[in-house]
Length: 290
Image 1: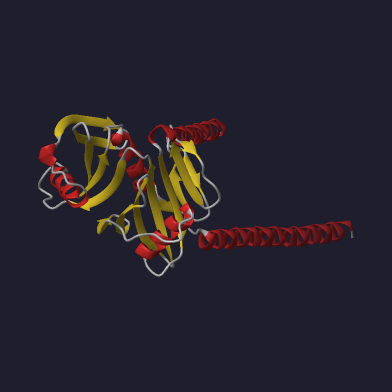
Image 2 (image 1 turned 45 degrees about the vertical axis):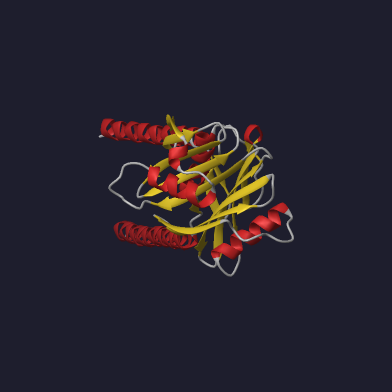
């Protein structure tokens, strides 16, 4: 019996050690920014400029910043615009040069693109979450280039390529078409494979995830566009709302108190039974003595 208990204890300890090892390894591989409202992956290789309630990462070599936050507003588009204007200190923000919607696993996202001025362009994804709005922004601040990120539902889900959506994005946001660019191969990145097309003055990258195409466009000298797009998509797909576990906490406390009360009642019942047994023993002793 003792040997069985010892074996069970050892097995439980091993299982706990394995679980702890797996959790710590996962944390090391995918560190997360955590707040009371939401969680997003920390972008490896980017400067972490996050603050309370705002996850923000900057890549100086690309003059790029990716930012995630939650804000209030009348609707997703106005909330995203107000957040961008407040972040950049803008009194006015022109209408977006692109506006669309895409249905992802966690809801409908509004996709927006802004040409802020000659140096800055911004791409935003926003959706409602309760009485607030999630806003994820990609900002590029480089005078020699213009970089935009979009998510577009596939026009033909039978195609295993984002090329139609790349061509559509180029047509809407530039003077180019996909035929004006040359295929530069595929880039295998942590978030997936990206097809890259480019010439001397422009670059486009696209990747499929589910039934949607994730598109990145760059006008200017070619850069590491696929890596920027992969980081932006990882931020989007890795975003999740911090769950409200207060109900489960209350339930757990109630069950714990019930178990404690039952245990205390058991002790009291056993003590009373022992008192009765002791009284009977004393009575028997007195009877024998007489």
